[in-house]
Image (tube, rainbow, N blue to C red; front, side):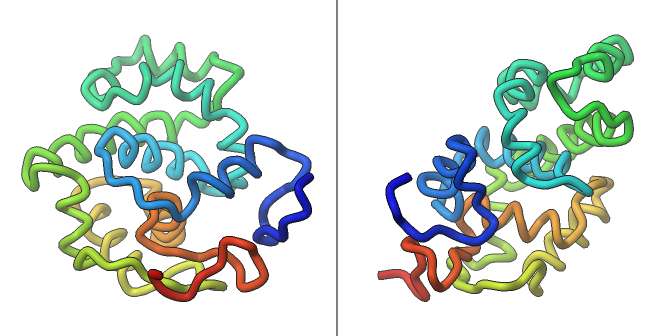
Length: 185
């Protein structure tokens, strides 16, 4: 390893996890395809570790048609059965069904706002939040509540908070991490 101090959650023995921590986590990326991918993956994290999901990311990408929201929202019972039999992804029937339903709602939000990022900006006011040692905040509470009111599941405030960290809305590197900063600069 390179000797750099990283966030306590980062398993230094997992190269994919270290790369994710160093180059992707908390880095702003507001491309709708990425926002969709991360929302889908975060919903599968419920009750599991992010490392477990991240280790299966490539398999999810393949199983979920390269995270093409238009394809996923049209999955039928045969595709659900295929996903349930795919040993390389998380095979939870409720999460798989939620991923299809959530895709439809994601697409409806994009159609309504022009992009998912535009939707998120109604809550974030286009600002980056710098905070550590939290699992929810007022913004994750509000987004979670709104997504649930639209019919999404597996989008509780903790999941949405993790999502906002993943996409770079919340910057949360530990104070002793080499990537820590308390504000833009």
